[in-house]
Image (spheres, rainbow, N blue to C red):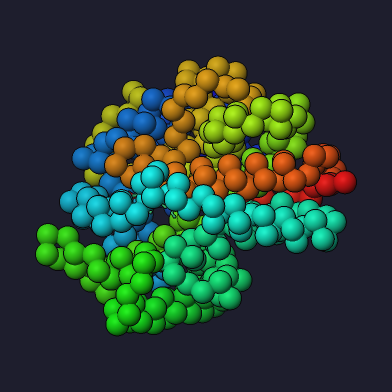
Length: 399
Ligand code: HEM
């Protein structure tokens, strides 16, 4: 790989975002790179290096890379969340909700998720055309997570709007002001959730906000700020990611019609198809860590305080881990991928995301036997975030 290509890594560049995979192929061919991207930054991409860093919270911290001002302006208003915490704070926060996300608890939600998917596809059938993103993928996860939080369904589109705006704030370049609409959406979302917290304190239900209100850990309740941040985290982390699993999965199947046919003939392959989608075109391309000390990774010394891009989607295309990694193959022998991360921050919502993905994709295939991409050659448009990879729209023919 040439030095020029090495230095061209710019996750805010639209051309790069449209197809980052050729760049990843070059990255996984060598050791971690040290570059200057708003300050010293390490690009960690090989599977072995990525898993080593994700499992090493002694030397690599999850606390936010952004300046305290930007963190205070963000959706959590400076409060600590498990995603951006190290032990022991992370351990305490994660324990409070881990029982609500076990595969068994999530399986209980299957009939309700099927009902929501069926209703969405009834509307598609009436309309006679399908855009996977606007008709199914955008709607289903927000409906499910809002229901888990105990938010009334009338507010779904309002919730989706808040969530999209707040996520788009994550793409603002360091040092740039937060746009007014993002600021407004953040305030409205937090204001609404704060009201819900007060309501649940007086009248608890069986929802997650009530569970958080009631949560005590070693006799210590969540602070009001932590509680609010928790609810916002669940909404944000559970929403756009799963939307993009459904969208990226349908795109991969649409571009590989023989795989779609195979899945239709052998629906028992669905769990593998979901894992392959996560590996092949993951909704979370990269996460970040900060080196706490000088630390050697993959033969390179990463100086203390370096920001680290942990490029999950590159690791998932590392030929040292996956044979013929650029081939989309739903029969692939399940091997650990890192689309949900690794180590103590491994995605708590993975069972829910897998279930929603399987139901959404499965019901679309069942309902529309002639389903295919409307125009396989049409250019694709991706949404605004590099970290969260997802399509703006995906038109498919159903007749
Ligand atoms: C396909 C969908 C999803 C993908 C690809 C995904 C991916 C990830 C990844 C990569 C991490 C680890 C980040 C890191 O180590 O820095 C993570 C953490 C997390 N995810 Fe997900 N996620 C998905 C769906 C969900 C859902 C549905 C929820 C909840 C409803 C959720 C909630 C969380 C939370 C709370 C964390 C933080 C866990 C911790 O710090 O211990 N995610 N997710």
